[in-house]
Image (tube, rainbow, N blue to C red; front, top):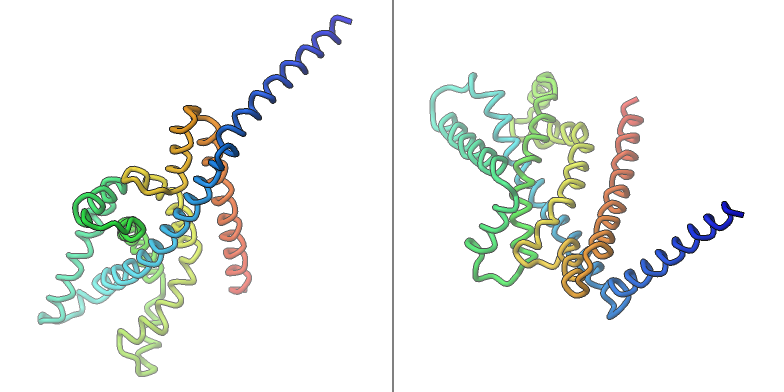
Length: 255
């Protein structure tokens, strides 16, 4: 009898807790359609991530080619304008990588928003540029490692086909390098999704900012921020699964 009473009390307390939690969920997400803050924020997050990734890959490819070309050919090049230009651009790329990788992304975003584009109202453009430039520094090292992993015999094969250095890089080296580093690039995309959560520092209505807006309306931090965390988790798990499928297919294609 004693155990049944204790069990009843536990069930009653759980039911009471659940009723209170349902009220909190309703107040934070359903009332006044506050869940739309999360949907709008998720859409903004995905747009920023997509455009930033495109810019990051473009910058990364150029920076990786410059660095890889310098490392592979600088010792064989004769003194002249080509050697000077290659060393000059390699210095610029190294400076870019050092500065971007050595400073926090949130500081870069604030500099871009409050200083460089202080007069612009296009927050999507500003955020995409900031995160794209940041991502490009990491993509550059990923792609450079892929280029350096290609055997020098591939360069010789390209030249035997009549290709110059640039043509060999475009038609032979870069495609193979991309295949080798594609899983790493996909993981950079996943990291980029989470990095965009600092967009709220400059007032951009991304997913994390949407949860914070809900908190400011209801003065209840847990439900809104918990929903943000769950959405991020679901998105990351989804893309992580796609990356694992991609890696499996790449391994199967090499057999």
